[in-house]
Image (cartoon, rainbow, N blue to C red):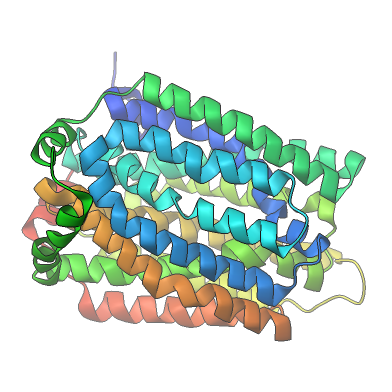
Length: 428
């Protein structure tokens, strides 16, 4: 059989083992959390939570992630990548979904946010499960497939819209959270069933057997030296912080600004992430593989920051209508979706790939734990800051993201670091 020309399709068909199980189960997010996320912030507003409190909840969630992110490397090494992923996915997602489903006020969301921060543990273990047995040259493509799988989730958005139209916002969102509890539990079981512990995971489990968590944490000091000595790791951390902060603000306030400022009705909210996701998938199978095929990733990174910046500035420039959104509003929002789909998509893939390519193979879980903790600490204030800005003007959070993207452009242009290992890995 002739090998498919598209490198993304070739990677998808040739995936085996843990990589295949991890990528193939990702679309289940579409029948769970992706159905409810477009309404999450608006749901909180409907229950009396204000903009400042929504931003505060985001910051508290990040701080929770900092704590568990620091512990994630130790936990992942002691329990193994596979077992850690299953256990902490249930804690981080299934349990909060039940709390969100029955939430009444700010305090319910606060408790759920703290528990949800546990997902940083499973993010570490899942990343290790995904890439440790995958050829390094395939890592950028594998992360692209993960992004595509998540984007395909938006195809199910009309289900949420129909529920909101027929049942009203509050009841529909509660039902969607209960549905997410069931589907996430199924996803956890499938991933556990069709994966095995990685070779590196088996070695680390044996090496940490009988060693206390506190002693393992103390040994982080040796891992810190690995990070500090690596210019590539430091640079990838800066990019991850900037991309993460922009993603945080957009994830919370994009739906709010189009709903509350631009007059887009509740029932239409899920269609915007759906269109953005479909566009992102299109880009991942056409333009993005061509841009990232070469050994140098600097130019694609610059392009990603530039295009994403254009989308954020366009959103800010859309005039607020007197009542409901006008035809011109939807036309300009379509432009935002087009720019965001490409910019956010390629930057997600590149930021994750750069971290994975620069990390020390033998200390992947602990290095990535410190990296994620650092990223979470750096982006934590942006939840509260963006909430404070949104309380004054709902377009202002996106002025903040525009500044961050400009910083990304400057950092990439001025401080780009390429190692021999990275260059070799991306040649394919």
